[in-house]
Image (cartoon, rainbow, N blue to C red):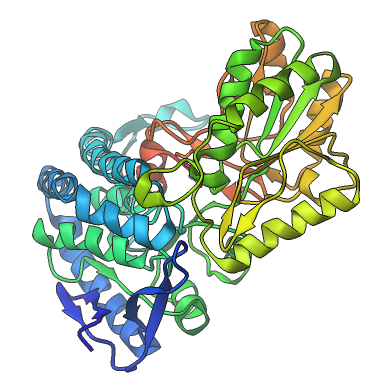
Length: 478
Ligand code: G3H
């Protein structure tokens, strides 16, 4: 069926023997935009088998040659930014400009992986034995970093290209092979991105991309005995994966309930601008979005007014028109967001704007006077709805942040750097931003979540290290 995008295996584009496809619904039109192959477990088996074989040769390919190919893929990716961004617009309703910058950022990320990889993989350690009690200098230990084998990458719908290459780049430079299972929404953008690696001429089987239903191939992939590492970004499926996976390194970035604490001495214009950018960009569908504002009562009225003034200026509509607020990814996501809004209404939150929805499009909404008994105080909407909780002490803010199951990022607005550092130390999150909204980038910064927000640390350097293992050779002298 010519209308169904092929999957990528053994350096070739293939039609699945299942004869089935998975539809990708355009979030704006709510009709099928694309179809991808529904791969079978047998096809997954073959892909992993080729990945295993290709990896053996790739591990022996000089690091500088691996880097050259990655630079080539990065350049091709950037050259093809327009068609890839167009897929992101149609598949995940990402505003046109953001879709373009996702692809450019991805090219830069792949190049950075190549550069960082040649440096950190070019170094090992030399140790001598007589540091440890009872030893003479009779043993020399040489260490180097070796690849893990087959890396399985599972990125989420909100960055189908960028959060795929943030796994592909580190895996490949470190000498691993890679199997990509893209999210359904975003699969076609991911296949186009993989095509750029194909054009760069990587060895056959080294990279592959299998599409299909999670229910059919999800567990099969994550529990496959030949997979040596899983890098996953997404929701609480990650928790289920971590329980079922074998004894292999896992890298997980799951949800977040990023708190924004605003103190009395904060620059309220800066705080308001950051809350709007942090809470509403890509309609709040980022794990690092501002998901709860904890503001000191004495400045709350002023802050809320400033935020509302900016919310009023947000454009609402289609991603093709580069509107700020665009339809959320699926109807069920919109229904979930609506459930949180209704719950807040019933429990007495102040609606700063009227709640408005048309299909998957939800107008931006700030909810003031949110209390801890409301679901929105704890759950992540992954939509354009930001709750404000008024606090009377900094401790109250920190306690709310730390009572969450999540611990991805947080931010604090104050002009007092000492207070900011103390609050950062007290917040149980992987990162705290001082005077700016939470964000993952720049992409070489460490990125990690505590508690249910993840396992391990990402960022280019950390990911390369995570996708390698230390190998020692000990020379024993007579
Ligand atoms: O959705 C999760 C992403 O890792 C967030 O990335 O902060 O660049 O939007 P971002």
